Image (cartoon, rainbow, N blue to C red):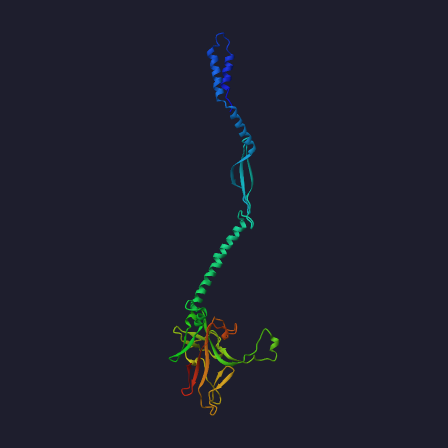
Length: 344
């Protein structure tokens, strides 16, 4: 370590300035020598000097030392930092700015890019605003479907069959349907079918070239839709009522409903006094073969099934559209009372 010789140098200068013969004494000379001895006592040994020299060389070799890091400039893809240094040999300070953390890739970890934050926010908004509400809607639909199918009470196939089975009963002269409550709760509506022969007029607007010389479609026989989704109404007591519109207006919204069979079948009086019933492509004469004016009993087949509500003239409705079985019933004409009755 360095020795402070300033005070000793001052004493020597003053000692040299003495001019009188008796000014120099053993005491004054001894005082100066004692001060020199004290200073020498504080000096390090050669080993200490050697260690200090090695330390100094090591600091020169170390170069710069990091003393602080601050957030650098803003960037969309990287993290920048301002770093502070000190020169270990001279003590001089220095700073530098550069990339501190690079952006993340599929191959390495790193800083999240600004676009990734935008994408995550967009994904979050889509999940909260679009996906989750739709999932809630689907969950509700699944719960309703499970309730409709009665899942949990047996095998899946058995539950589907049981939930879609409906039947008709005649109660006090009116038609009551069984097994339709769950179908109604699920949003399905009843449709009315008749067992008839039918031949529709040909009017294919998409292929007008096929219409040349063709007035009717092919003949069909089976269950044909009568009216539309407005032709049947179901009361709270599961009593079926039928549109009171005329036959030609059955596809329109009903002006009213009636639980009586007369709403479905009407007798036509011919000019010759005979009576008949229009039935699909056929006309049913109420008279007997031997006596056309003597009426006979007639049985007409009907059926009810449930499907989603489809507005008239959108798509053809057939039993294939139904989610339930067909609940069949009949309307019987009694020639004695000359009235129609519901029957099985």
